[in-house]
Length: 66
Image (tube, helix red, strand yellow):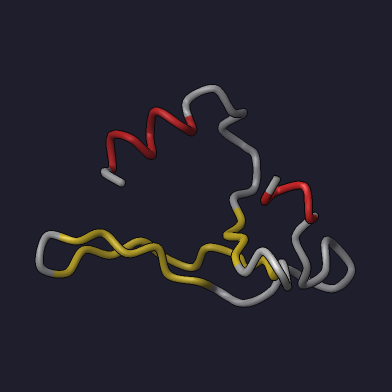
């Protein structure tokens, strides 16, 4: 995926919406985004730990992967 493709995917969302990373469809964990860095022309989204338990907890909704 390119930066342009990611921007295009995000353009219809509210600018103030929280962005979380979801992975592992069989055990759907979610993580906050800590940083975005570029190394050797590759942009990395760096995870920043699970959302606070009082908010969303460590698991993404299974529907994210459907």
